[in-house]
Length: 371
Image 1 (cartoon, rainbow, N blue to C red):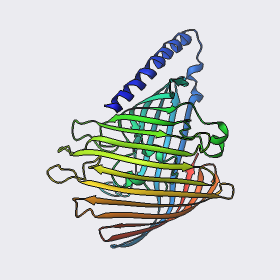
Image 2: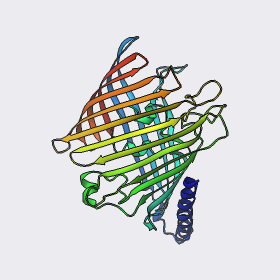
Image 3: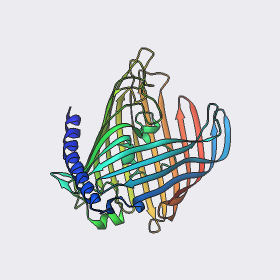
Image 4: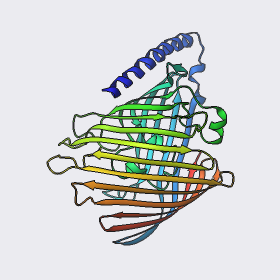
């Protein structure tokens, strides 16, 4: 219930200002002041992962040149309060009639209502409506920027999904960090005392239809306890509650604790989770009784040569309870990245996955193209 209360407060703080501003903009448009809706307010950007992969597993080995993923972002600002975003997600179809085709689906499609400034402890509160990101995965991607290697921990473990259909409210807490820190380390989620996000979703994820009438609640609260002494230190709690996306509606209740540090030259992130079931409903028996799982993950990145060269590593561990066929799942990742220009980089990585006696190894030579 606390989550619903926070979401309601943010909605009440944001909507009156947003729609009040919209009325004012309409009056200005009637007076031929058209600056709030110029064609050059449209922003187009892309992020593409492409290169070469070698795979070795129990069933044999393969190698291929591939486009792992591609995102094209279209963002349009109507005025300072209202904007929209559409992001097609391009990936290789590996099954069905279209196997081998590059298929496109929507990852994001939403309206954003935002009020710049401070309201009590909230800074830049915003509401997102439509096909929107979920509270944790998008935040984690700003700490661990190597989505090019693969899905992040809780998404790879099939516990959470990165986007879904619903409504989400988010805000920074207590103003923002100084510009010096944002320039040196990063300007994503620069809340002086942290940030929060809470949303209500269908629950099945952005690439599935809803199989039941349940809605899921997902949330994140991040605190920055020492903004002046150690601004890169953050403590996060995130989770979800609802039902898995099957007609049996198995229980889904996930709790995650995270400790992270972003600085120069090192970034660290450790997280531990416990979950009953998952978003898709796959962690349940044939009667709809959910299994219990828990696990942890650690990520580290060292930056060298004035941030041009990075060495990174990650280790994931997931253990199932009451689920003999699930057993233990581990992933080990090591990699090297070289920055070409801004977010464009070359990445070489090696990963080893072990699950129920099965071992998979992957070596990649990848390029991240972002413009």
